[in-house]
Image (cartoon, rainbow, N blue to C red; front, top):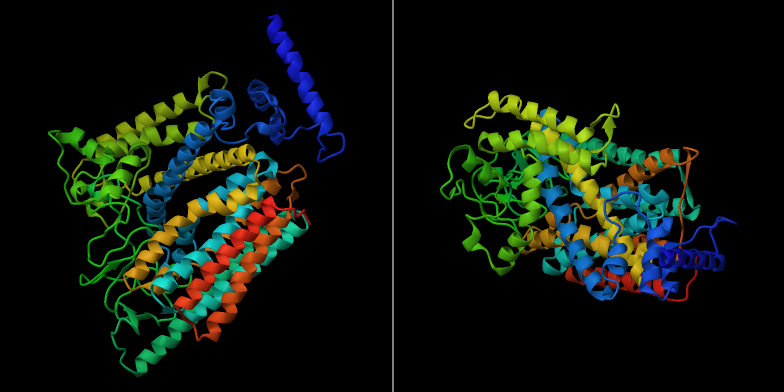
Length: 630
């Protein structure tokens, strides 16, 4: 008891001494920054400091990652950081798999059931699906801890924007020179420049109010209107020209959908983020909502156009996706496998076999066809896939029986809602001070599962099967947001341990983690001879992420702020460097590409790579150099 009292007294005196020596952000605030634990030379004092300092706590998420190296492994901090880095990789895989395999599938169901046109879906639901990891990471960083992690979000948005518009576009240009789409390119770059300038202005004044935050969302609404009106005008002109002459069917020059004009080569097409591996069971591999055949194009992304809902041709189809590519009618995921229609049940039968078919996280049918990397990745993500399979449904109207799995969908009635209430930290709240929320959700879910089981069979999907797509949307959103919170907390811990800023972590680890899929998929398209499709969303995609990521998160933050109007933001020289680098990249592209008659050659790809290296070097020099804040 005496030793404990002495330790507590010593700790209080140490904290008081540190607080007296450290300048605070507000006069007489008495607050101690978490970074100040570095000034303590005892691992036990560092652990106690982290445990008892409010600035070291977390507002959202489940794990305080600083406690692991300094309290759990105080004598093996380097090993602890290696373990945390591996855990960061797991979180990035979880984020990507959830967005690609489950969230986008749910968005497709919503788009189909609401009967949205492909034009509307392309610039709203589809764009949201593609940008979900970036947007939720921004929301998690800005809305948590009163915005102290805003630098992480802004650094990630600027860093990802520079990475995609330089490294991804540059890599595609080096692999396969191509001709840039003229009107979509000019439109997207101009809007992106406006968004970057607006963001920098907000940072310059170190404050954002509610109208300004909503204005980010409003600017994207204006962009959507420009896209839709432009498509309408262009399509009308093409239809008029088609009525005067017979349109050729050469894929390289003209595109048609069910006999109607979709657009000219100035427009390209993409689709939802596609599965990073395998889906839950053989029938769950969501077929690409985009397939390109000779004379047929389906499914626009940002900057594309589309006509009526098409009927796909069976010949020479190319399924284009964010993470998969093939040159046949069969889908070939880059990190996944070819699924056969039936997987052996290993002796299981009936409902048990059907349930295992849905839960099995390993692609047993295509295992032999995988390389070493493919098998390793399959094993690595198997636990992630299993947990997601247990909680999230996938409804696919293009698959046989719409991916209906009777026992698994009944299980989802229980596991999905239970996961949601625990993930939002309301599971143990008491209703009326008596019954916990999780018990009520469990009983309601079990009752619903019984109803579903009694009103359905395994052979045919029930009439209400589409509702599981909406449930999957809610559950996958919670998965993505919870994972983004953990990534933000973990990156903040890395910043504290290595004493580097959130902005650097955002423009490197977070930006790379969220953008590496674009690089892999787009370069794969370029190698297959479709470079323009590979870069079709390299400007419109980051534009959406910046406007909606900052708009949504800052709108929430301003509403949650004390005066419900203003939300303070920190501004550093590094953030100005990020904004300036993105602006330079976009302006140089806006000048050089039209000057070269929109022909993007290898020289331009090399130039873009050099720009990114220079940007990264300047950012690191700003972080570790002698520059001060402006």
